[in-house]
Each structure stands twice: as structure tokens, then as C-alpha cells.
Length: 182
Image (cartoon, rainbow, N blue to C red; front, top):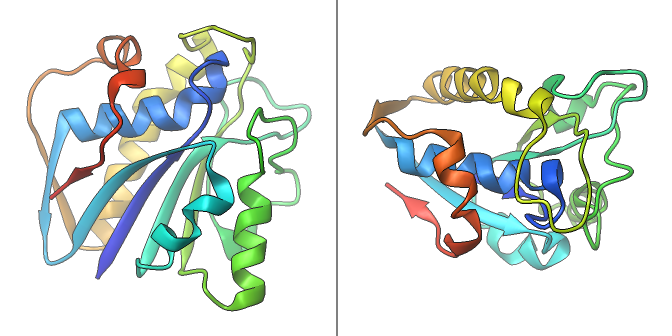
């Protein structure tokens, strides 16, 4: 099985870049083994231009910001795209074309593989802010644990490479224009 870990977000808008920062962090901190291929890709704000990549996979996990009215920043949601919680939407992100619309377009064509969404509620979405708010930064350990636990259920084992911190990754995320593969 081919699994895609896809980070979505705009690095220029603070918390909006958490999906990209997070997949860069995971790609640097872990090596993955198992019977399945795991590819880690920075999807930035490409949305519908990612369709030719996404359809090549049997399973996708998208890391992005989400909106959930009345919920504090850093709140984490992890759900199957087939069962999006009613309190969750992607409205208010700085993406050019929303990822939700892209996934819905793929559904219409019958091309969307099984999709899990890991979404964190942002605070800071300001132009030219290369950092994460305290609430979103505090959510990173839970995001990491949740992702690694889910990958294990798919038969993908994680092997920690070295002591990588999110702060060390954020300052260089804009330089990571490649994917991390097993």
C-alpha cells in the first residue's frame, strides 16, 4: 500500500503553515519502515494541482489548519474525511483553493483514496510570520503521537532518527522543497 502524508499550508501566514512545518518535522525526526511505502509531501497551497499526486496513493493523511467556531487555538481534530465532524470546516484559511473543495472534486470523479484529516485550529494568520502561536505549538506533541499511533495501525513503524525540535524545523521549512520517502 502507498500512503501519502500531505502537509498543507502557507508558510507566510503564521499558524496557517503548521501542516508544512509538521510534515518537515516528522520527515526529519523519523524514518519509517514496514510493508507499506510512506511518502511525505509538502503540498503548500497547491490544492487542486495536487490531484495527480494524490490519485497515485491508496491512503492519504492530510495535515492542515481547520476552523471550528468556539474552539481554542491548538485544538486537534483527527477524523476520516467520510465523517467530518459537523463543527469543523476549512473556512478562513489562506489557501488559494481550499483543500476541502479539492477533495470534493476528487469525490465527484471517483478518484479520492481513503482520506484521514489531522486539523489544528490556528490563532495567528498574519502575513510574513514564520512562527506558530503558543496554542498551536503546544499541540505538536499530540499531533506527533496521534500520527505515529495511526501509522502503526496501518503497519508502518517509526524509528526516531535524532533529537529534532519543531523550532529548529520552522526556521528552515521554506527551504524544504522536497519530499521525504522511505
